[in-house]
Amino acid sequence: MRKVYIPVLAASLMTLALTGCGGRKASWKDGTYEAQSSVFENDDGTDDGNGYGVVSVTIKDGKISDCSFVTYEADGTLKDEDYGKEDGRIANKDYYNKAQKANASCAEYASMLVQNGQLDGIDSISGATINYKEFKEAVELALKQAEE
Image 1 (cartoon, rainbow, N blue to C red):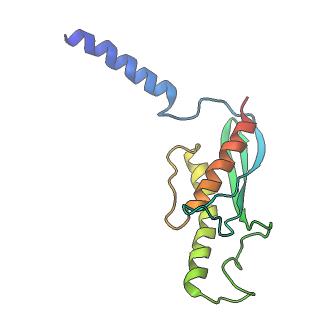
Image 2: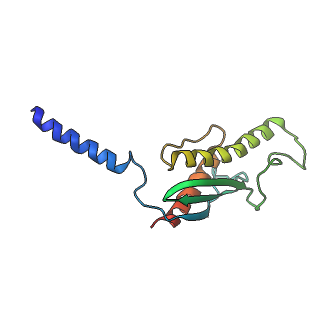
């Protein structure tokens, strides 16, 4: 019985090594690729002005070497240090802090992608789930452009 397990184990390990633990299957062309996400709705079917995300992914030597991710209001206004303010001032500190935390997640998602080299294994950051959905969709679209 033992002799059967060794070839099966060897074949399983070989398959795992070749697939890279569920990693990407396509190879990527060097270049910089941009993509925009959809506007994602909340669980209740509203978008509450979630807007959309835009990613720029740079591939060098077939690997992800750089990434940037920014989000915009539905009207095209960049979500920046003013995101969460009302009429240029902080009317609701809790809302502003949550908005800024979500905004900060953009750089974190981009950094995780460069470090990880693929989307697999990147989890959403608490308080930035919509940004995660936007990021994931935009990266998938950008990497699709880069496929050889």
